[in-house]
Image (cartoon, rainbow, N blue to C red):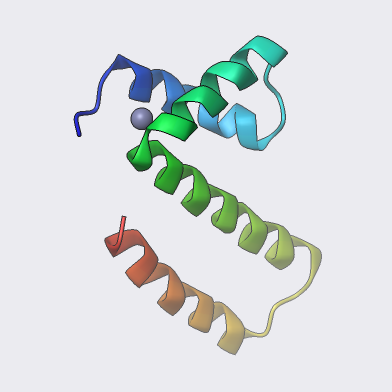
Length: 81
Ligand SMILES: [Zn+2]
């Protein structure tokens, strides 16, 4: 699998997609590409998880031990991409 212009475009759209900040047309582009592209789909899933952790940590004060555990969990996930 090669990374092409579509992937670059998709990466551009990804953050806004996660923010639900895209036009309907751009959503179609992003979703269409995520359907076809394993690489971008993994990226998307990773980013989505990351955001959930960030949201949790922003809304609640996480115990230091839990933060360390999350950081540990994050490592293998990144390597597995
Ligand atoms: Zn892609």
